[in-house]
Image (tube, rainbow, N blue to C red; front, top):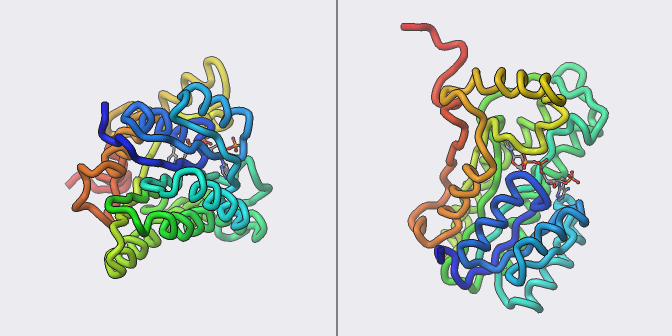
Length: 266
Ligand code: NDP
């Protein structure tokens, strides 16, 4: 249980869901974890549950002054950063009015989704590089989505922002390599992971059970994933076990991206 021993890690959007699972697994593997989110009460609970190897800091990823403040605190308190997981993300379905289709999209909603999902990742990489330059083995893990690889007609801002995260990851990976920084950068592309993000889409009670069954039926492995399925991959990409891996995209989606619903039988 020491794959991340001695490492200082920051996880965004870690008050629940995938971010929480990553924060908890990182701590279990020996890292000191800075849990960040905009949901301060749940974020503090996650840090308290982890114990003395964690602290909570408020961080709205789309706001540069928040990143400046957090970067300053990390430099003062820890003098380094080894791991950043840019996890915070929104679909826009509940956070903004929409619509989210290409013909009718609401421009403010489009910008709001990109501010969190894309600006948030770009700012995270910017401030992490500054803190990680002196590290001998640092890692940035960007949580994109399967929606960053295929088109999503009903959620164009989400899909566009996640596609941009996929590409920005590769630019960051190459930039750091060119500069001689020991900072790797990779993206994870989850699909159909059962987290609170899905709650409002699934409904409650019997309706929820049927909705989960319907989502699972479309997954080749016939089940939705768990937050820990993503956390295990994040541990690998954050650890020195992946020291020769940079600029990759890792799909964690039960096989969704391996095929296509429109594939002919032969
Ligand atoms: P959740 O909605 O369950 O958790 C996201 C967390 O991020 C929440 O605590 C949320 O706070 C927080 N958050 C929202 N906006 C900001 C912000 N501006 N700054 C900081 N924190 C913020 O999502 P998941 O755990 O399901 O998803 C995590 C990541 O994985 C996201 O990037 C998502 O797009 C991606 N993903 C998830 C998939 C899935 O099937 N679950 C599939 C593909 C990708 P609050 O509760 O206050 O909004």
